[in-house]
Length: 340
Image 1 (tube, rainbow, N blue to C red):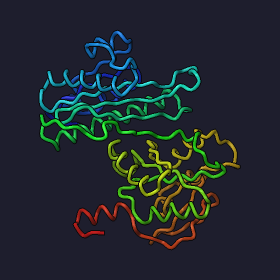
Image 2 (cartoon, rainbow, N blue to C red):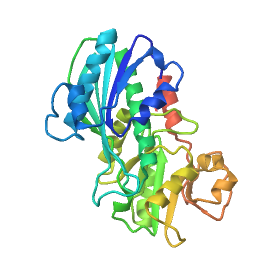
Image 3 (cartoon, rainbow, N blue to C red):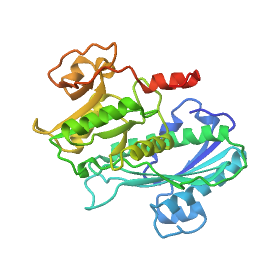
Image 4 (cartoon, rainbow, N blue to C red):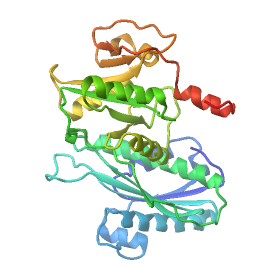
C-alpha cells in the first residue's frame, strides 16, 4: 500500500477504527499515513468537523463527507498537494445483542487533491459478529485508501471534478433475506474480470437445470489472485446485473472455497443435510481444493479442457462440453493486443 510523497489522514467516528491499527503495522505506512482521529462522542464529532452534522444523522453519507473534508484539511496542512482525507462513520453490531431491526452499515468517504468527496456504502449481514464486521470494515477502508493512492498517481493534483455517482453501493446482500428455496443455494464465486461467455453458460445452466439463479460472489481477495478495490467491484457488479437483471451479486473476503461455504451456511443457519450450499467452480479450481476441504463442501463442477474430472461423493459434475476460456486468458490476450 506504500506510496511516497502522499498524505493520508483518517477520521473514523464509531466503528471502523481497526483499520487504523491495521495500516500502522504494515511496512512503509509512514511514507503516506500522517495521522488519524476517532471522535466517538457527538461533541467530539462536532469539534473534528468544526460544526454540527449537516442532517442531524451521525451515521450517514453527509456525516462521512464532513469527516473526509476535515481529514483532507489535516492532510493538506502536512503535504498540500497529493493529499487524501478519509471519513468513516459506522453502526456495527453490539456485543451482547442489539435492538431489533438495527441496520449495521458503514459510510466511507474520500476527498483528495484530484476529486471532491465520493462515498462507499456497505451493509453488513445481520448475523455476523462485531469482530467480523470490524474486520470487513477494515478491509474495505484499506482497499479504498489504496485505490485513492493509485488514483492520485493517475490524475493531475489540484484538478477537481465530480465523480458520478457520488455514492458507490458496495453492498453485500443479507443472504438470509434471499427469497429463494434454500434446499439448494448455488454460490458462484470468481473475479469476473471480465465477464465472459463461459460465465454466462454456467449461470444459464444452473437456471435451466435447477430453476433458480445462483448467487454471484465477486471475490475482493483470492488466495492466488490479486485483490480488487471496492470501486472495481461496483463496476463488475453493474456489468453482471445489466446482463442478468435481478440476480444477486455480492462480494466476499474469504479467499478459500471452504471458508466461503462455511460463511453462507452460518448466515443461513444451515445445520442439516436437507439444505445445501453448493459452491460452483471449474474443474481447474476443483483440482486446487484440498482433499480434506472437499469432504466439507458441496460442489457443482464444470469441465475445463485439460482438467481431469476426479469423482467425489460431494461433487456434482455438470454435463457440459469442456471449455478452456478464462478471464485470465482474456486479460493476457488484451495485454498482447491479440483480441479475444
